[in-house]
Amino acid sequence: MIVFPNAKINLGLQVNGKRPDGYHDISTIFYPLPVCDILEAVRAEEFSFHTSGLTIDAPALGNLCIKAYQLLQQDFSLSAVAMHLHKVIPMGAGLGGGSSDGAFTLMLLNRMFNLGLTREQLLGYALQLGSDCPFFIMNEPCFAGGRGEVMEPIQLPSLKNKLFLIVNPGLHINTAWAFSQLKIREPKIHLREVVALPPDQWRDLLVNDFEEVAFEKHAELIDIRSTLYRMGAVFAGMTGTGSTMFGIFDSAPAGYRTAFPSHYFTILQSND
Ligand SMILES: C[C@](O)(CO)[C@H](O)COP(=O)(O)OP(=O)(O)OC[C@H]1O[C@@H](n2ccc(N)nc2=O)[C@H](O)[C@@H]1O
Ligand SMILES: Nc1ncnc2c1ncn2[C@@H]1O[C@H](COP(=O)(O)OP(=O)(O)OP(=O)(O)O)[C@@H](O)[C@H]1O
Image (cartoon, rainbow, N blue to C red):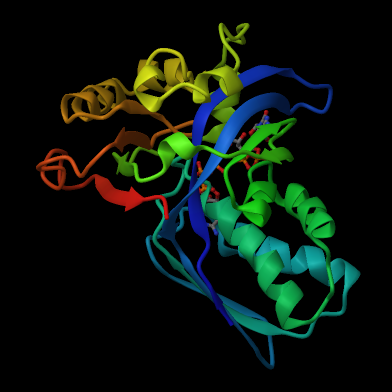
């Protein structure tokens, strides 16, 4: 069985406060984008896990695909599988690639072994893997609260026919570190109010609280945002804790393939 775990971006990201369990409550809009890894699993004599594509900077046993298998193995006697992950989505990038691989592994194993897990049950397992994982079980535009697991699907008609230019400069930003550096502030305006406006009015209103932290460490990100606006973006911002920046465009910006250094991962996506 083959699945294609996709990326997400955060349209705005507000951190509301630290909780007794050490995590933070956030408010964000998760938006799926069709930049995908490729994950295959087949029944096998013994468990194995291999990867290709981008090099994953973590021990294989820490991979969320293996963690997802082990999580279900605790509750169901799964037989062995051979898994292969081809990595395309940049890592430590705010695109949720690892989280998506974990969530898709849960859904794949549910189908492969006819476990009969409901969406609610899958959401519960996904949250045990990571805060971003439950979103990929839903995988449609959602307003999210809590750690990200309290989700409500939303319609964003103003983004229909828009193009997203994803620009990742290859800087790895550690999520735990980014949370530890934050200064928590009262939001000036609620995300729901901002996204009810046309995207060309989102500038300065659709805020990602992690931009201050990431921009202070990597001034390069500020240049990327300026370039995106110079190219005609109706809105440009950062996803997650960074380092990926994105621009929203009405049409394909001229020269986007050569606008950034060649070592950047740059891809233009439509949202359908
Ligand atoms: C920044 C976002 O990507 C926004 O979508 C997510 O909140 C991050 O989700 P994630 O990468 O799945 O993060 P997790 O693997 O759950 O947590 C990594 C670390 O980040 C911090 N963390 C994460 C999520 C959250 N709501 N509060 C936190 O304080 C914690 O120190 C945690 O140990
Ligand atoms: N399947 C996986 N693919 C990529 N990284 C993984 C995977 N499983 C575990 N990891 C670990 O998770 C780290 C973060 O990867 P990920 O792609 O999820 O980052 P991210 O886009 O910043 O995520 P998020 O937005 O969820 O914080 C990697 O550096 C790696 O150590």
